[in-house]
Amino acid sequence: MNQKFSSTVLRDARRVVVKVGSSLVTNDGRGLDEQAIGEWCRQLAHLIRDGREVIMVSSGAIAEGMKRLGWTTRPKAVQELQAAAAVGQMGLAQMYETKLRANDLGSAQVLLTHADLADRERYLNARSTLLTLLKLGVVPVINENDTVVNDEIKFGDNDTLGALVANLVEADALVILTDQKGLFTADPRKDPTATFVSEALAGDPKLELMAGGAGSSIGRGGMLTKILAAKRAAGSGASTVIAWGREPDALIRLTQGDAIGTLLTAQTQKNQARKQWMADHLQMRGAVVVDAGAAAKVRDEGKSLLPIGMVQVEGDFSRGDVIAVRDEAGQEIARGLANYASAEARLLCRKPSAEFERLLGYAAEPEMLHRDNLVLTR
Image (cartoon, rainbow, N blue to C red; front, side, top):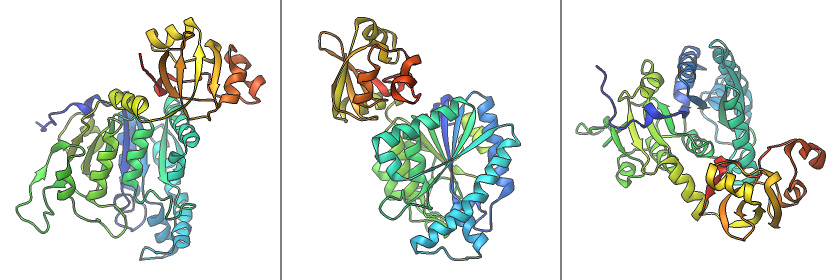
């Protein structure tokens, strides 16, 4: 019988981000590993049939580009890295499209930069796109947009990108597939007394001391980047597992609770983390005043805020800014991320969604504040 993790976070996870490293995707730089990618896509399909939502964060574009260009050493010049990424991204996207379609799944390529997630409006746009793709049953395949980034805006490694995506979509779990079994107390290649770490708390400072430097010559990340990624993912309540990517049926067995790899559990539940982030760490840039009916829907029924329930807009804010929701007595009942800028919101007050396109010139979200981006404050 397979040994199980003591925590049930992976068995209970409904939304999972899977990150796979360059050395696995490209078979240590020898070109895209068609068989391995096919295996992961088969397992993703199994997870989706099991009722889960999955997002794939895949390295490999630069490594594949290097192979296609005949380069054996990773270049240091930014323009050469960007050129390799542009060449390799074609093959990477085509491979995932082919293998996912073979499992009756649609795929979408999503390229992100740090600037996409640092800017509030672009953050919200990226989140909306990814959640829409998941709703449509399409698997987003995400990579850093290496063709346009420079040193100032690079994520630096796709472990960090995986954690940021987990935060972006409020995933329950982040699975980092790598060429190592997981975390040891020291480098087992150098220290024969090193022992394997099966479970620990994400963010424990001792974990960073255990982790070594960069791994392969193909990828940029090492165990330390994975430990730091788990710490970052835990900030939004997502637990992380670091496991060997070539373990048979790794993804399927992990979601069945099998103790494969190292599980780093988040100390804060997802909803608690979201509430803390929204309530305590963001400045509000404006507010909307709502009628009694809308206030009751938001406060008592956990509904999104629709513009038809808004009676007044206060302040000057942009899409993606945090704003307050106040009742007609002036009391704040909630706060959240605005789907519309203040100028647009004023046009939408008391209007049904059927009129949005006529008023704004385009059709967008029916909600002013979606319940996923809204937290009650009283």
